[in-house]
Image (cartoon, rainbow, N blue to C red; front, side, top):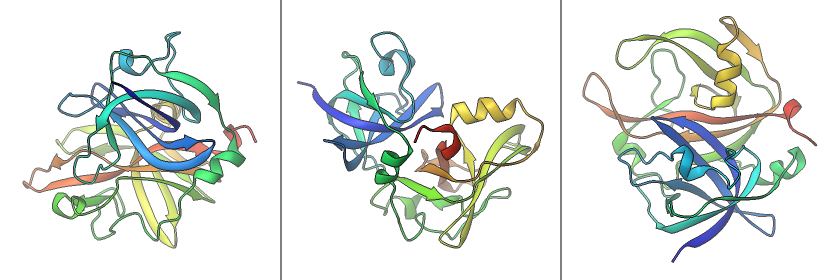
Length: 235
């Protein structure tokens, strides 16, 4: 029997052939724990058919959604994972603005551990063994200033690729993390390579799936799964 949970959607990000949707439970508009719907696929991504509303539209960040689940299914540090009941549709029941969004913001001392950086990133990598010891894989943070950098970078397989990177300070620590928010990617990939100042924003930061690097190490990367710019959201 399906268990329906109501969440505030805080990510609908790009992942393999589908999406990674995540949000915090919203009970009487009180912020609750994180929930990440997952499928039975090897990489747990959610397909378009599985996540769409009855009218065929796609969930948007800041939607309040009722989602049916089968059971809690944690995986390593991704303790927020719940197995989706793919036989039932999702239902949009509302949407929030900036003021209400700020109630869901968290204030961790740091974004997990900050001991490793990739060639083009900053504090963006965690060894798999260290990540597995963590208790969570999602945060919603507020930053007074955010820069997006669009440039060509060599990916983990050695292929040159244009990408969007979020560059920001959080608690006096600099982070440069790849963006997987498809709305932001679509917008800024259509622009010239440059650095863009978005100002005050909220960010959903996530630990991605385990990835084996060319040197054989297994790691998880910190990713910006959603960029919520204050100027783009209703009050």
